[in-house]
Length: 418
Ligand code: CTP
Image (cartoon, rainbow, N blue to C red; front, side, top):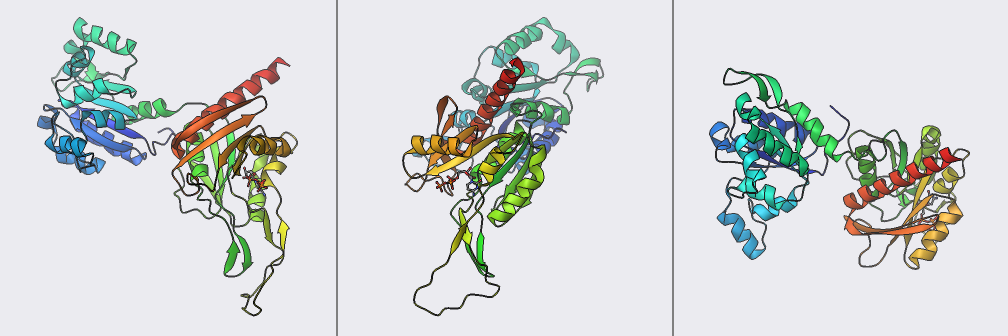
């Protein structure tokens, strides 16, 4: 299977009534294994083939079956999030992608006609999410010109059709009509999310706060959670990059397919970067690296004595500036955490550190991104700036990676012209 993870991806799986519905259980298992959050909508016919409970157990979410569901309507009316409380509009908005597998001839026909006569059809009609259908039906039904015309129309509207495959069918016929295997469908789902923006790139990224030890039990640190850096690492992997994440102490799971190097102090972070930077084509510094460290590390716990105490600090090396100053330096991106004058300080930092892009954000105020799941950043590069409006860190990370991919390609094209 491909390296693309589906972490944080919300996939709504529509299951129609066909014998292939039993394979959809395996499909849910594989999607969940790749990190996706899955919700299942079953048509009435699907429930004749597989029990609701199977999908509920595999997806760890309630299964949705009714167009008018009193509980979810109650949720809408009161604004409460009841257990199954998601009506067709909420489900439609919730999904990052809608996968219908198996998609029967009837469902294809109903969606082509724009009907909304059951929950699945209504969700499909109400959603702007990308759609992927894996048809499964008798070969005659598939080759019938009515079905073929529906397929052409759906394809024109941007629905991606996977399969059907050829082989022996449940009805005994041999031909086109079998649902493609679950692992192949998962590949198609993954491909839908891979932007390819950093295909072939090798990224080194720093994240989290460093800890500068004073004695065996104390250290100087800051409030950075590492969430932004981890989200960027995830987005970079999704975009096809090979990623090494050098992180301070962060209570966050390592994104799949990311190589994580754990460090503590700024000096350790610098050494870890130096070890791997040679082969990197990209460097992103999101870490909140301590600017200073205690001049002396005390081997034994500092004892309380005088009423005041002075700790001498010495400057740490600037990892980002040193990476950017290297001969054949990778394309470098830094973050600027500012409490005021975002534009002047952000662009100033970009120039003084000699980096290609600075992503500047305001910290310290009410909307401070430290520890939060949201952020808003302004990107500064040579000749431009762009605001990435307040959104989840996952979303900001994806936008940033897309933008970096674009700038890297542009830079390559410019170099080739010279
Ligand atoms: N950075 C770094 N090494 C350091 C200090 C900072 O790599 N020793 C990187 C950060 O990862 C970030 C960028 O430099 O990408 C800017 O960090 P920031 O703390 O905003 O700026 P400083 O250079 O520390 O300047 P100041 O604290 O004076 O604002």
